[in-house]
Image 1 (cartoon, rainbow, N blue to C red):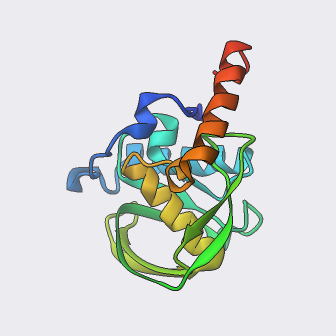
Image 2 (image 1 turned 90 degrees about the vertical axis):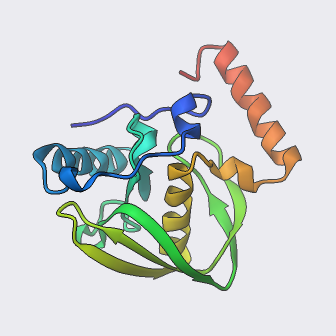
Length: 173
């Protein structure tokens, strides 16, 4: 089921999310939530989606750097923990909660994350380049951090003013 993606300005996007409880793993509700997240992300042509972006304050996100082209690239990270990063990359980022805006952001080139899957099994995921960027971007969402916070104050202010104008015209809901 497609879910509404909450846009920049909604307080849910600035919320520090709660861990998924042990009792929730393997439940039909959690499995459905993950399926809904992939469907919503694919429909929006994104490469990642965090639970707070659809109004769920759970420490959970999905990524697929193939943008829905290769189902084997789908990854689910529940209660993720970033255990290592290395290198550096500087590349363009966007966000489904801030549609129409893209800016260059500096991130580590490689990341290692520990997480659990929908059944509660622990796994480790290593990624570099776009996968590392997606993991770090979505993990930020779980801590109430948007990619705008990685920009200079000037760039952030320019985007915020443009969004204010869109809001006044009723084009940002």
